Length: 368
Image 1: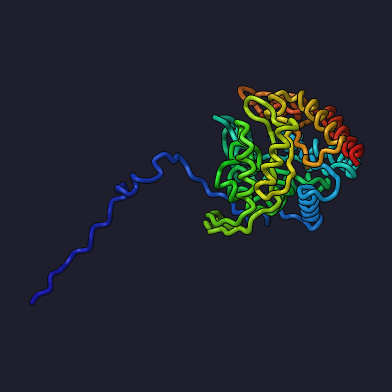
Image 2: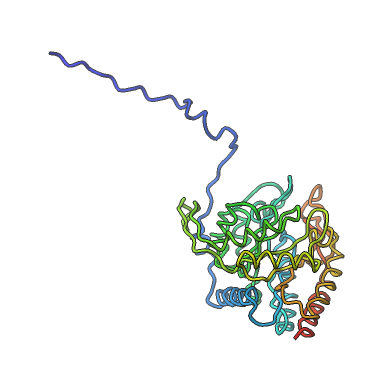
């Protein structure tokens, strides 16, 4: 009997139903440098790696109550001008050495900016400040700046927003942050559980402290999740948990939360959760009512309590730059911006920053 010939199915057209199911709102994709290649281009020397490791060790010791020093994370709300940031670091580094007996200073070097709605998303995302989004250039610029700051002997702190970015920069960072907008995010709690440095987790923008305490507890546990490896390839990541995470009180939308009662309640919550009863206070954001000048008042109140023997406050965060206040990026061009002034949240100027750091150092000495 003759065999029946069966024709193979026709090749589907390029514009198939499958094509209509995906990427309908993706305007463009561009290749991204791998973490391994970036680190190969801009490696850490043994000396710079030593600054990072010493920073992590000192920060971890403070988080767990070893010694009497206060951790201070200080610097711009977000870095937009690498030259101004390095200028700032050159002033901060000798002051950090001078006050080292009382304070351990970490420079705040934030490259990602979470937005409530819209706005500039940070140096990594948009390094030219013009909406051109040259991300590979931003990654190179960020890593080059951090290595320059480390060369001055200053450890750095960064907020981690995009869960891929730590693969590019985390080896340079001594202290990390999970911000108020992501404190309740499972993705960011998992991320914190695998980071190699102490991580501060802020209370929510509404002032919910429980969110931060739960975040610290979750980050201390092991997790399995998806991410990318050193070569930028999708991978399954398993973590061991980060026992160096801690709460950062940054105030809420309607009131501050660095008062003795709130700090006491938060320490109790940490104790009930089996966590170290230690926390950091952010003197900016809700705790200063959005007024950069009031940070100095917050520091004064905290310094008095520290001097009287308060042990639950492990550190203070300050938003500070060369020039006080802030400026709008748009409609001005980057060339017209005031040198050393923030384009995101308003910051204290350098003179006030130096005064605040000396006041905190004096408080630690009086407590001792």
